[in-house]
Image 1 (cartoon, rainbow, N blue to C red):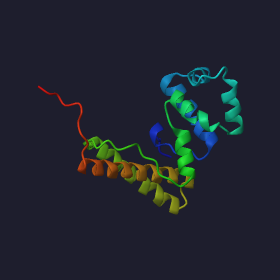
Image 2 (cartoon, rainbow, N blue to C red):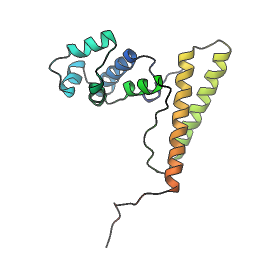
Image 3 (cartoon, rainbow, N blue to C red):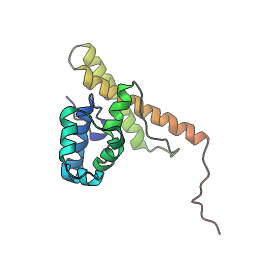
Image 4 (tube, one colour):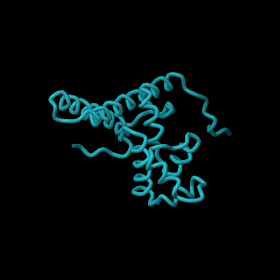
Length: 160
């Protein structure tokens, strides 16, 4: 099984999405459940543990929870469970060679997992995660190219 980075993970349940958000906050930002509760404006951490236990998170607290954890796994799960692809809003910026190499590596990983899946050597969840990641990255590049064709006004110009 290949090691997936934090940004390429695709949760398969709300509970898993919440756990991964908390894991990310802990490992990348040294932020405990107490800190997440404080950042969300909650009086104690036990509410978060209760939501984690029963796999429910109030809809009005999804964005504060993700902002406190600094990653959006819950939003990704909700979108993907509705059979939608999620991409960041394209900025129209020119991609670097590293961006294109990342896209190519994503294609390679997805095709490799797809072949292994049809040979019965890997599971569906891992294969779906790779395919979704690749489709979202490709859709982002599509959006970047479209935005590049229609540039926006640059209000940051220096005038004399």
